[in-house]
Amino acid sequence: MLIDGEKWACEACVRGHRVTTCKHHDRPLIHINRKGRPFATCSVCNCTPCEAPEEHAKLK
Image (tube, rainbow, N blue to C red; front, top):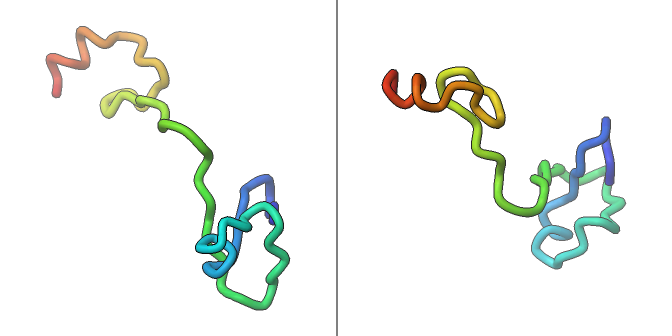
């Protein structure tokens, strides 16, 4: 189910691969992350993509 534009589902539906059809409002819900590899964000400036990777690599 979508709540404020984010996907949520109960644990039973997550285990049963039924995340998109979950309608269990009475059970504890788990936040569902987006599919695929997460974006690589810079730990210094927190931008995606980093605007100054050479400078920030020196700071790490």
